[in-house]
Each structure stands twice: as structure tokens, then as C-alpha cells.
Image (spheres, rainbow, N blue to C red):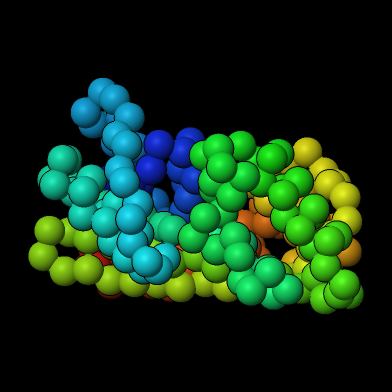
Amino acid sequence: MKLVLASNNKHKADEYNAMFIANKKSGITILLPRDLIGKDVEIEENGLTFEENASIKARSIFNLTHVPSFSDDSGLEVTALSFKPGLNSARYSGSHGNDKANRQKVLEELNNLNTDDWSARFRCVICFYDGVTEHYFEGICNGKIIHEEKGTGGFGYDPIFIPDDNDITFAEMPSTEKNKISHRAKAFDKFLDFINEYQV
């Protein structure tokens, strides 16, 4: 079965492919839009929630490819920052995809607050759309922000986030370990259960 990931982000595609392989789910091939239509697709994410943004992307890519599509929208929610950056996680510094600048802005804002509460969570919502029905799957990973970046793996906010019950950041973990406990992995587990039934 082919599924289109409604994203231009190869990191996400690699993570999802790795999770399907780790779960021994054969017969699933994750494609990016460029694999089918030969180019990246820019989609305006103007939803007000993770659910809305995931839906916008999944529906847009299905309408272009006519292949069952899924998308996730995810972000970092920092307690002391009133759950920002949230929906703006990828462009928090003002420049979309500037991971380093985004991390530095979060650290600067936390350092400017008189609080010891650096708790945070990653939240992910997956939307699957097959042209007829839409299904959602949510995953949350709780943890905390640390004062300086550690690790070179992962992407986004991984170098400043330590998940609960761990003492290293996502960026310090092997991808196989991160993919067991991340917000995306938790949403994926629910998605996988659905896909197993969907293919029957």
C-alpha cells in the first residue's frame, strides 16, 4: 500500500519509514508529493489548531495525487510561555525552518522569565484522508527544556528537549530510541493500528 506524506520534509518521511520498518509492517511505502508529481508543494497552513493544519495538508495532497494521504502537524508547547511556540514552532523566530534561531528564541524567552518551570511537551496530530473519510491520531511527549543545546541528531527543538524519565535530549538519542517514545511515535502507534484494520 502506498501512502503520501503531505510534507516536503524528508526528515519526517525517514522517521515514518523507520517506524513502519520497526513495527515490521511490510507492504507500506511512504512517498513524498515530489515522488508523484515531481516537485515540492507549498501549502498554506492557516488552521487554528494542529488538527486543522493536518487536515488542510492531507486533503490538499490527496486532491493532487489521488493517493491516500496523511499529514502531521506538531509543535513544542512550553508551559511558562503559555504553551508557545505551539502552532508557530517551525517559524517561531520569524524565518520558517530556521531551527537554530527558533531554539535560541525559546531559550532567550525562558531566561527572561523569573521561573524555574521549564516543563514542556511535544504534541503531534496525524490526519489521514482517503478522499472519503478523515481520521485523527494524537501523541504527546512530556518533558523539559534545558539551558543549552546538547546533541547533533534529530531536528527542530530536539537539542533542547529532554523527555520525561530520561537524562539526555532527543538530539542525543539514537533515532531508534527516539522513535519509541516521541510524540510522533505515540500518534503513529494509533495510526498503525488504524492502517492495519484499513488494509483488511
